[in-house]
Image (cartoon, rainbow, N blue to C red; front, side, top):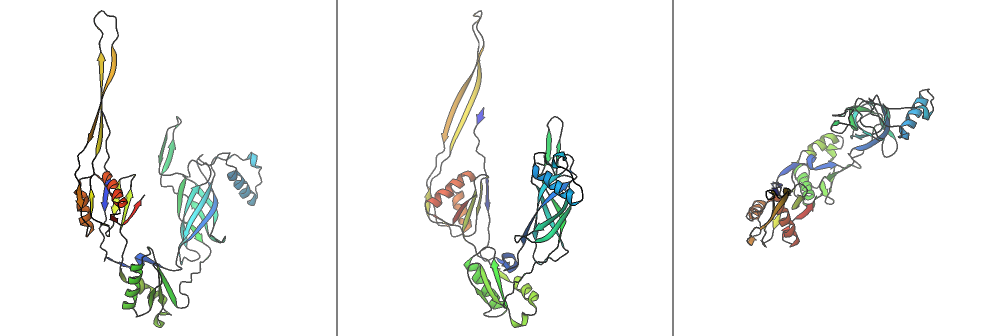
Length: 365
């Protein structure tokens, strides 16, 4: 018997209080304080026959150039490599990191190497977007997995053996100057721009520290005048500033991941009064194998054939009126009254949005 089975998804409700408070340091950052991305091209050696193949010409050329700098001259066509791989090395340079500090790096295969397991990255300069070298990386690679293969073509793999990391694998060689307090003014940037939240941040700062010192410039920026008493003690001022609690607001939003059947609804989702009728259509296919026996002494042959029955069932549905939801709990209660699965709920929500009754933003992943 063969059946078409409907797989139920996951319906996730996130209840967030619109008046819930968060620290400023958790919802915003100081303008000018940010990470910087670094990148470099390097060579990994010491691989157990899992390096780049002979057709990866840039790996061979890189090894030739490296050997020449070390005083060894060899023609490229005479170089046979199995234990070397060309890689791209990336890193994130945190703010306020100083010369001599160590940072983590990620190493990714650039050619056709099968695995970087057991390899060692040779000294690799890491440059920023301005072309200057800010760090130098070197060290043994950890891939957090493995890749094993047998002689018959069998292969067992865990994680991605062509990407690894080197904890504290790069030494910072150049300091990054950060000017986040220009002309006695500090600007706070919200992670999620919102006019209401920006206004609340400015009001909280003015009421807590000093009146008329903070002003919301737009939905993401709050400009703060540094008080005279703190201009020589900026660290303490920012420490007291980022620990202030602010009521964070957010828009009503419904997120649907149709591939996994996941629905996430925010606190401010509202549905206008709307009438909904939804019915399911199920299809069932039954296959029976039967044999036809010939008559005695007829010299016939036994014949096997399939008998297939197709059953179509459409569930009855009733028209329900879903009233305006004053809060998320009432909205959920009204939708559950329809008696739909999560997969059906996705279709219902999309239809409600199409009808203009969903007072929230709908995002489909």
